[in-house]
Length: 508
Image (cartoon, rainbow, N blue to C red; front, top):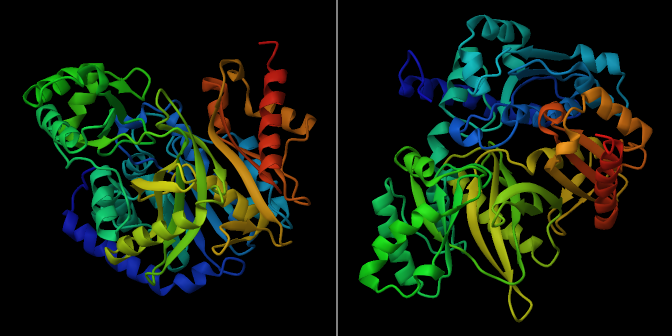
């Protein structure tokens, strides 16, 4: 992700100047219902592209930010949404129909769609930078003094685009990227006084990784398993499990070689991953070894927050994550809110992390993932395992809830209340995937939604909203958020969608 033509320091200074403008305009941007602004949405997954390829239909994840279209309910907001490939018109219509109280045509006139017409395995931001004429059209479409950009994650590419367009980016400076890596997260947990598992320093080759894993085992002789993590892995796809039981009897002086030999038998969380490929990434991305937390009753909650330009930390939500893969390391979806027995504790730990990030100059979204294990006394032992200094898989479902209901999150209870004062709950997934769903077109999905009344009802503020619709035909993969007035109602709505889709595709 090298910035071209100009030096990184020059881009950094211009970027900081633009962000200073954004800080000065922050109040008017936050006046959501009356603010007059142009929002440029760059839903680029500017992550390591080899890691991204482990996620089926990854470039369709650009659709996850389509919930931003609900911001068009503010009649003075204009939205510019850019994608790698053109979006199906029916997908756009679907989101605009969710807008309460705004004529469809009025909202559509304030939405500008641009495409790079490029489905290659590059990040969207890179594709935009490679197309000066596209950039000029974007520049001409917005009001510079009333515009800002939002993105999935902030890298030197997004910084370069911000500077070249002359439009501030509402995100952390890419110079802070380290704090969102596995090793950077561990350093912040230590500084913030947040519990986290024992683990190693960052290493850059397999030999040092074997040494680091051996040192961890000697500190924790009762360990049964370790997690080997690529430092910049994504959504758990860069994780592997090292089983220590087969070499438990090895003498200390034999352990480095024994662990090195075991690397060839790591249980990778990503389908099709091999040690040959995994080890080749270590010199590029770095790796750590971390104690695997065992437990009979174990959960994977998370907390989400944001840092506003004043430096204030806001807690936005908590979730219990739904994980899959061979050892429960892959993010599949989430339930909101997290269990009441630990959600307030999560908030407090998340706030400590947020304050540390704010002191380092971070802005906008961050998330912290945890492992919670129930103890014999009924209390939960909570260990922080990772910081996401970006939007994540829990961002878009909560954004959908907030924008659809115009409600509020109450930190004293950890609940979200609609304007009618009802607490709201949801179950969400990015990975409702079945072979039988392949071949379903967006039109087919709309027919199924209408025929079976699966849509979100703005009157009751319950129902399901769908995303990743572009993924459906090729990969049989769909995302949805099912919102209810109780956890059980949300679960039932989610299960109803699955049941209906299964029935509607039973002939295939």
